Every structure is written in C-alpha cells, then in structure tokens.
Image 1 (cartoon, rainbow, N blue to C red):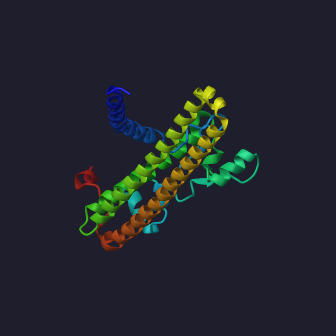
Image 2: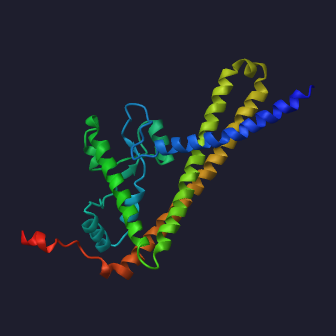
Image 3: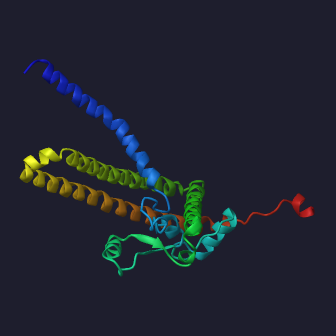
Length: 258
C-alpha cells in the first residue's frame, strides 16, 4: 500500500463531510416542496384526492366561539367549523384498506362532492387550509404583542422548528433508503454472486430505515400535540385576559360623513 492510499481515503472522508451541508439543505427544500395541502405525488386517478391534515384549522376549532367570531371580524376571514378531512374508509381494495391502516386522509364532505375535474375540489381545500394557517399565525403574532403573552409565540416557534426538522429527517431517511435500493439494482451482478449476504444486507437496511423513520414519525406527532396544546391554552388565556381590549374596526368619521 502506497502513501497515497491513506491520503486518498482522508480526502474522500473530507469530501463526504463537506457534502452533507448542501445535501442537508437540499433535503430540507424537498421536504418543504412536498409540504402542501394536497398530496400531488400520488399517481392518477388519485391525484388531488388525498390531503394533508389541516392543523391550523384543528387548533382554531378548539377555541371559544366568541374568540373565533372576534378573529373573523378583525381579520375578515372565514374559519370553517366543519371537519375538513376524513380517513380513507376501511373498505374496497386491499390498497384502500392499507391506506386506512396508515391513516391516509381524503377530502371530506361537502368539498368531496365538488368535481375533481378543473381542480374545484383541490382549490377549495387549499383555500381553506391556507386561510386557517394564516389566521392562526396572525393570532400568534397578536398574542406576542401583549405583555405576558410572548411565550405563546416563542414556544410555538420552537416546537414548530422541531416539528419540521423531524419531517425533514424523515424525508432524508426515505431518500437514503431509495438511493441504496437503486444502487442495489445497479449492482445486480454482485447481488447474484452473493445472494445470502445480499438478502441479509437488504433486510438489515430495510429494518434500520423503518426503525429510524418510526422514531422520527412518532416524535414528530408528539411534538405537534405539544405545540397544538400550548397554542390552544395560550390563545384561550389571551382572550380571557385581554379580550375586552379587542374591538371591531370602526370606520373613520370622515368616511361616515360621506
């Protein structure tokens, strides 16, 4: 072994470490690219049918009715009180039953009755999803402007960062598993030469991927539950403590005169 061998190995290791920076950034962008109301990655004819959970709406629906009415008046928006989605029914094909087991969501009535053609159903859900999120974010910003309520926003921001970081980590795990699977197919000749070792390696990789994914998925769900509870209680306390200070916008006297 020549002296250049260790040097080449060290260079390769340094390149691998340096590559993690842009790779991690790219994976985070992939995660945010796929984080939208309607799951667009499903093939036809399911395109536009399956949706992401309306987390903003779920928090807003837990607030007191008078607080919801106040937010609608101030922000001039509509908060939908109905459940926006439902789990795929446990009936029909084995694929549909598997989706039910995995908790896949689809648009609920009355939006489900809208025609899928022309994206009417998809646009209706997207409009509601983004409206609820923007309303919730505005409510959090309002809370931060009141004395003694800044922790509502700070705690939500911290938990939100953890939530999305776990989502990006989950995306990275799946990406790594996909890359390893492709490399295994490309080296099918070596696989045939060592079938036993190959099968053991594939099983080990699949098991490790599933375990890490499950850890990130469970931790992500628990993080969101904590964030949702803190927001609900914080916004309720804010309305109880400062609700009398909130007033519906009144037109200027000059406008009333005209």
